[in-house]
Image 1 (cartoon, rainbow, N blue to C red):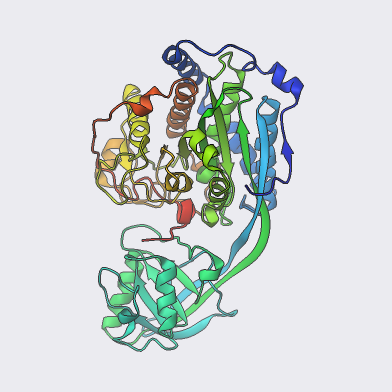
Image 2: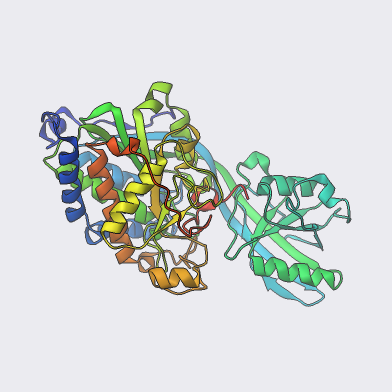
Length: 508
């Protein structure tokens, strides 16, 4: 596993004092599960969890306005979570690792001729940089097909030498697109979305970057493509990004007792992007998880299964914290983790209620999760149904920290409330809110602050976390119960909105 920079196990005194220490195992798993889940749902509230959001906001305010991995803001956030859990009697550890910290220095695109105008562009993580002031060059569109810009043949019909390549999203990763454009002689790449919403992407790793690359909305890209049909277009293009090797750390906490052979794991990423404080993304999931963990520690119920919580770092840089954690697990340790639940952006201000489509019953995007994922989806959906809360499925796109767990066969699930995806009229009718705008209009922006939280959705998803913790702490029998598929109207990005991991998208 990543080197542990500062491991602090709860002291023997803390363990002895813990209300979950030393009690006999339950002889009625289902009964104990129902009792504990009711208790946690009752006690864990959005109102109480909001104090953690206030702490995250104050931390960002005192540390350059963000809590990005590798920054003082993230370090302080991790220390706060660590202290809260240690005082509650958990076995808590830091798991440290190094990664490439990134920070956008410039992201500008302007049409110089024939009709000058500014175009909004987002620098992709791990992009190479232009010089200060950027470059002025001709814009050349890559012809459209199912794999636009992915193969060398896509660039054969035009001269891309010294040009900026205009490429539609789809068919392969952003890294592959910009690499193919570079081979054709392009000096920059702008990739535009093939669906509504901003395009906030990553090249995956610094070594993959060949030419400066940014993302555009579908509308901006299609307008530029239309301009090119009328003749030559010259643009001014500046993309600059700081890239620096830095340390950061995950926070891992687990109950002192409970069978390690039946480990129940839940996680949320703690880091923000550098553009803002990240109170919804993902202070909300982190705060909700923390509040439920604190309520569990106060309960007189002793979990029969070990419950482990994780606050991941560097998710916004490509799921790095969760990937390093999973990669370091031994085969035995992987087998001990019976499920993983992920909570990322659970209080979007124009949000919907999305449940990861574990059985792929929606037949959208990626396939089903590992065996047991369908049951996790069913259990969450049943809980929401019992509360009278509408919901729909969202695809396992791999854009959040469940991704590494799925890759090694660990049943996974969770909820979110949407990010940069655009709410449809049908979703507005189902969930409320405004159609035609993003679930979170402040996604990856400075305005993702304390005012960017829907308290009702926050409370509902904290209840989901509480019910899951209470149930699976004692009873895993539902994971082997057959599932009757229940398709919804979910879409690949209905609840997505993470870039590569959550923040950035690597693949199309």
